Amino acid sequence: MGTKMSVAPVVSAKEAEEGKEENSEDRIPVSNFFLVKHIVEDKDDNLTLVGTMVQKVFETDRLERSESAKAFYFEYRFNDLMADEDSGYAKRRRSEKCVRSKCTKATFQMSAPLDVDTIFDVFPFKAYTASVLVELSSSTIEEETHRVRPNLLVAKHDMRNNLSIQLPYINKMQEARTNDSQLLEDLKDKMDKMQDYDFITPFPNVEYIYDKKKKYCPKCRITFYLVQQGNSKMIEIIAPMLLISILNTLNVINDEKVENVDYIANSAAFTLTAAFILPSIFSKANRSKVFTVNTVYVFLVFVGLAFSSIPDDMVGTNGFAITGVVLLWLSFFMPVISFIRFWIFQNQVSPTQGRADIDDFIERNNYKQFNHEKDNFKEHFLCVGDVPTKDKDNKYIRTDEGKYLFVEYRKERKLIKTP
Image: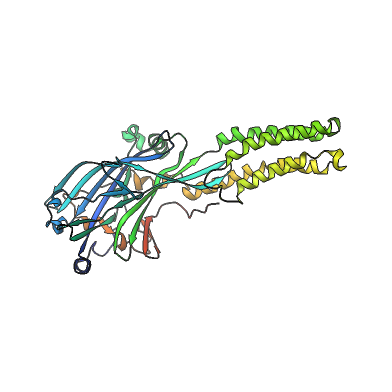
């Protein structure tokens, strides 16, 4: 995987010395590997990412002043919440020290809460991001007089040393592994323990956040793209609205045969039914917005019903009622337009539905797992701040924004434009 790159040392001697003298601190290189297993949804609709984390702290000889260096590791925070044994978010299973390679290794069971945000909401389709911000906390040694900061590293050649997706058990057979389409379906079946959501692609966006002022990277963000398909909304909303539209049309056509009181009563019944049905298309994320595609759809429905409720005898023409019928039927073009927009959005997130990303996340083919006891970490990892700005052969894309540098996977994903 990848092409070897010539990069600066992970932590230069000058930089480390400056950290000691000026700030009485060290920046310690750390590799944090994620093995993603599945996402589960509880009865309160909260999502949790379940997996394993393996934290490897290098150059531990710089920490020998503390006895804790025998099994040194950095504590975690998930979405700014402490992730420890008490919270249950990160439970340490074991830790070890490799004297020869001056490295410590700690393995954690991860149950990370995911923040769910609406990224696409155009009736009847909704898409969400489910993300966790993983932060390694700084620590102190020498009776809390010397600070050590975790400096996250990224893999130079094979991104599967950053994060991998656990293979479905059925795909342990080599024959099944060769079929990418079947593998993707098996991955979704294995990873999806959710009732209300489906994956657009099972492969997440991985982003590292580098603090340019303090010259270290303590955070990374893992983001999944989920969707609520519009099939249920078709039955819950569009089917009843179709019936209302048909009955409303018949009511307008038979205006001359219906008394004004009965005509208005029928129109009121249609409007009241719509009033009970339509509010369910709104989500909490867009109630604060006035002009959205969803509000336009609702506006068309109620304006159409309002015009349709005006009897011919009352105004001397059926033009208002006919206009209302036309507006009501025009509202059905909105779901069609929404389908096209949703298809474009899915294509932005993952044009091949994940097939182009398989070898960046699945441990197969030429995957070589980093061995902390045998391999030199400087040959396999680099500091986030050292990721090249422009390199067509590089696996990462780098973006400078103020005091922070963002480095994320250069995936097949296009620039996502939300409505």
